[in-house]
Length: 315
Image (cartoon, rainbow, N blue to C red; front, top):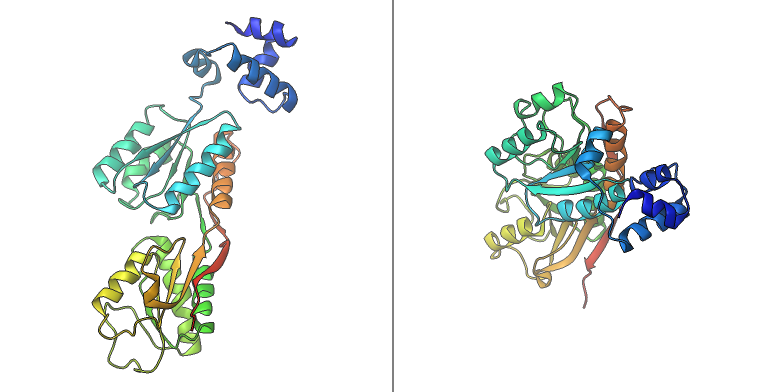
């Protein structure tokens, strides 16, 4: 089966078939759908090597991630794949298992024309050195969620400072008078969340601690809220301080999902990041970089989707 056969069946030019199979926007949507459908029915398999030589592209984009356990990894990967497939690109997900050597190895592979660009969620090796070759050659990179510690990068993330402030305000409305702040990770997202949480507490003169235990100066009658990036951090804190905390009275505030024991808390608030908006923005920036239309390094912050109450106190 050849392009000529498909063109004859669909009654269009061979060039139209070629453009449609590359998802070229110059082809009308209805025509593109017809051609792609017929090609699939007839079992047409393009010569990818030849196409890559003609286009000068692999039509592959990598997504380099630490693991598959978190929402910040799972959902952007899904939405990126959907968005990029419509543009004729395949998204290939590769893991570095939070290992710096594996991470550097994958970055080196990108220098060997295996992909046209890469989305990266970094958690190791924030130094510039592993990226230097890629940056020098203007290889398209878009970081998601966490920004490395160097300025020559484009990042799409949540407006984490504002999101953490909103999360704390919800806890205060629910009666929180004292806070445990557990945004202790060293990545840029956690740093921004810490700032958003602590700034409002200082402004409102609300007692807080960042330690692993409840301070002696905390009032025994003041309701405690614990805020963190994940429910596991809050649950670990509860385990250590269970003798001091009152069952069913503590307030919890986290990002993305709650997986803890709900009966321990009077209220649980979850700040949902807008992963679809993050993925769509990242895809747009990547395509612009590939087209040579975006040389600027920038950080784009996406407003959090919403804060939901997983549990409210019941009597």
